[in-house]
Length: 357
Image (cartoon, rainbow, N blue to C red; front, top):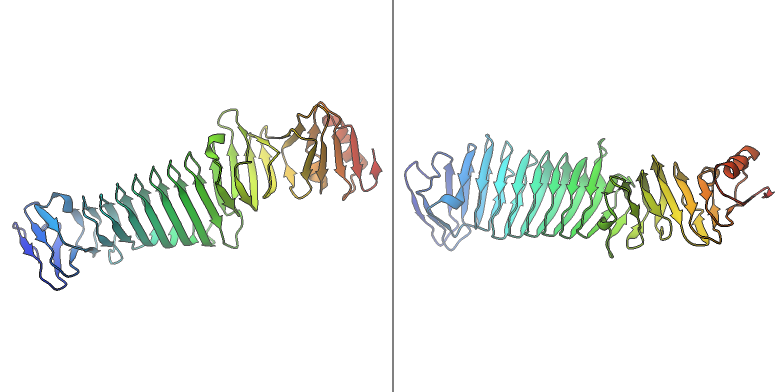
């Protein structure tokens, strides 16, 4: 047990346990572990700066216990950090060494550094500020937590995800969610210049929202599965999804323009404001993609045939300069719906189950 004086600890060949508090762990301490698996136990809350000790080597584990918020800084040490017995939240500053952190489920802040880090346990109301070091997250549950990524890669597997936010950086991001917690709120991934693979395996498709602010957020090899993709229009932006691998993705256009060619894997397109879906080819197959609140147009000078599977989508189509046709032969449009389509845009021919107009 450490004292308030400058302590010198020399480890043995066995598994040594050293305990201290913020009052007894001080810069004059020299702690050198031995050949066994050595553990430093810290309790009572307060500041614990392992990077400021006279010596701290040879220890494999650090455990934070008891009540009281804490501020733990590792420095260059690579350690197993166990927060599972902490009864309050706190802050951990990771270092350049390879570390493993076991969370308690309390509100924690982890500040990452250049060292590779593995994080396990449950995150509740926590903040994770990543850096250039690679990180692996294997989490039982996540709720109301924020992840700020940077240049390092981040690989997540989450068994149960509640409302949380992932702010991507320039590094590779992988996210697999096995289950949704069922709690209300949004699970948001803010895309960025880094590559990503996001897979939602839960029974709640579209429960995860991936948000793009620019077409630069899309890269060859990026993939989205069972998510909602939100395309923002913070500036006049035209999006092209042809570089993405999409599987069961619902697209939300918030005043943005989306190139219609290359929508394989998209299951719906919804819009708000002046949203547009623009086709350049002679054929636009929307039979399996319901569209609402989006102006569907064509830039093909010859004309485009728009194939649709529902009346609601047909009513969104405005056509373009060419000789455009709506092929709605699987549904029957009313006379009023046909008149609305002819009036609102530049459609020359409508085919539905009742005939050709």
